[in-house]
Length: 185
Ligand code: ITT
Image (cartoon, rainbow, N blue to C red; front, top):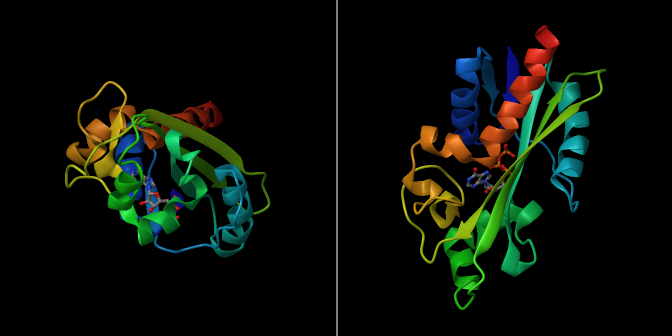
């Protein structure tokens, strides 16, 4: 059993759904950990892991994710949580109002850790674009304004299964599952 440390129930729902068919079981610990200010998600999780490892017995998973918008130079990126709480998805749409370049990507970094062991990092990326207006009530966070490449719908208009078929987080979960599978062999 792996403890997924996250305050975000949407993340837990997605990762549990992605891993359950592969026989990987998770429990959720609803706890926040300090996130340093750094330019890369992997640096944020690596520092956080040192703190979480001292608090959580056994194996744990943490997920740091961000939305990187091309026309905004990658903003909000590592600041996605702050931007979500302040201007929110509608604020990003406003910033992009006159912008023809709509490209963006979501990125997830997973860290699998255990006290006294070197951590393992897994990444997943989903390319897409920023919608003209927020659409859909599904998902969480910036989902209503993100249209994954190859789709016309936003993540907010998709079920968990549909989002998991293409998402950054599901790709990170697949990489984690491959690692766990190798470890079992
Ligand atoms: P943790 O407790 O796991 O840290 P969090 O919600 O603070 O939960 P992050 O810092 O990783 O998680 O997320 C940064 C922001 O990006 C946050 O506002 C999320 O809602 C949003 N976000 C992360 N993954 C997303 C996704 O798949 N779809 C839409 N928004 C997402």
